[in-house]
Image (cartoon, rainbow, N blue to C red; front, side):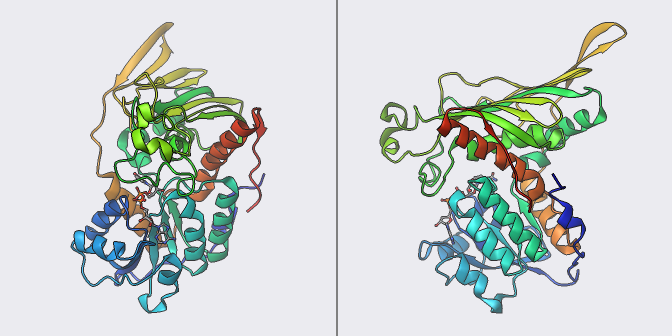
Length: 380
Ligand SMILES: NC(=O)c1ccc[n+]([C@@H]2O[C@H](COP(=O)([O-])OP(=O)(O)OC[C@H]3O[C@@H](n4cnc5c(N)ncnc54)[C@H](O)[C@@H]3O)[C@@H](O)[C@H]2O)c1
């Protein structure tokens, strides 16, 4: 298959005049939009000039809450905001629920805007392909909101793997879990198929996949045998009144074959009886890395990592102390702004995350069919 990223190398670099402030719009002013606005406020070379939400009055109340004045909010949806040429926007943050990621991203890219799109990339692989085609048409930057990979400990995982100390990687066990962690305190858009499309897989599964796939250079996924269930979400004993509306996965597991003879053994859970489904293990022919999980999986390294290898005829191990985490949101927004100013590259490129999405899509298809499925990512 051709390099998914090839079209990006052919694009002319479109830099932005460094002396003017970048003009940003926020689409979807719910919970996570709060983290975006707080970070934009701390960027001296940026102004947030517009916001839209489907719920009337929500965007205006949002900017009032965060103390940002003079923002235009009289839009019924993303399309109205994007169509307002008087805004002279450079970029939008798309903070909608998952089902609205692809349409909003395509609208924005086709209008010539740079896009910071919240994770998961999309709900289906087909949607991700369509977003990448819009990216290709527009020549603009799209970055997907995977801030955990900006953490120093996550970056250390990649550095260790890429250093070659583990040798060729042949097996990875990853994922994470929570005993009770269905995210409903902020509303129900995470648990209803109509808005979320994906449950634990799209919320936190994509982070576990990114942690290891980014470290090993995002090889192409080939086949997947997947399983999903909803035993906790749908049961009022564990999920109270929300059980009636629960219509996504709360648990997923998969066995994935990756290019390069690498096996990926994955599991993710919003709710289950134990506290964790196990640590992440990266096994190589020369060494291995154990990455402790957190009790309530949130996409971060849960404790000191252990590096195992052979030295002078002995099996030895080294513990890597946890490094202090920097402000991931500052890095997430800052790296996006830098990419707009410099005309790329994208800090978290679609060409990588489409493979993450392809695995999630494969898990859903395989679970439905009850058998292994092949993964095919079309040409962009
Ligand atoms: N990166 C992270 O750490 C992180 C954390 C939480 C959530 N998220 C992601 O952020 C997204 C939003 O999560 P949330 O908790 O803020 O959800 P939310 O339901 O609180 O907010 C989403 C908002 O988008 C609005 N919306 C939907 N479609 C729209 C459209 N076409 N035009 C304008 N507004 C529209 C909805 O009305 C809603 O107010 C999800 O995809 C989630 O996975 C990321």
